[in-house]
Image 1 (tube, rainbow, N blue to C red):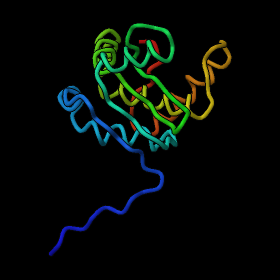
Image 2: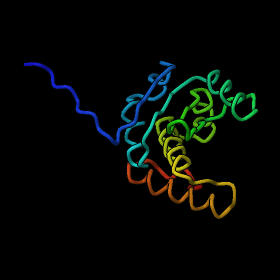
Image 3: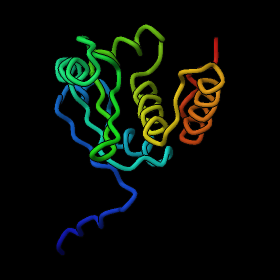
Length: 147
């Protein structure tokens, strides 16, 4: 019996893992990324990279010569690029599971790509509420709830 190939899902994302350490940090990383992206309605590409790649992109496109947790690009196609070291450090500092923090950042990026922003307090609050609702739908604790 021949193995069946998976039919492409038009709502699926393209996932590129350029740093294999993501698989050590987050077991089943592919499943977590795809589940969070689908819950947030994201289409496009997600790149799980290292800090060096994100620092270079951040310097070139935003004039900030440091890595950030996630960069999003709307053109030429929707894309989110995450920095392993920053995500790991933030998860440790916030006492969160790396998988939960990764899911949060995927949802956060998806909302940015859908036009949401957090520049003003009201916008930030709406975005936080949307993130909490989406994360709750996939069983990830509210990142904004204070212990």
